[in-house]
Length: 150
Image (cartoon, rainbow, N blue to C red):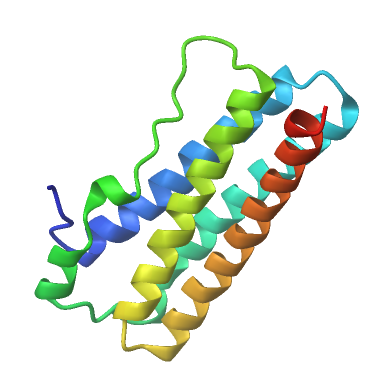
């Protein structure tokens, strides 16, 4: 089990993860077969790019204040979802991957928020978690309506 070695590593991971997700959604928007889906995926990509900026600014607020023991409790594999795919995904596969990714991001943001003693940083990560929860719900609804209820 690989854990984070530093707070900087956590923040770098979170920014990189948001960037990877943004690129994933950009790729899905290019594959979308209808205008509504294309717009939705483009919107998600823009939001992920905005998360990158918010995450990068966390360093300017204050140190996260997460202890070494708390770092050891954050297992990297709990937050990693491989979004790289060499082939075009079926829509159902893309939705499942998106749900997994936002679930992992949601967990990361909640775990960081619960470990930092800084109220302002907690607020940033809870806000990000709330937005990811909304994305997760939207993907679940889309999956249910487009795949399961067909």
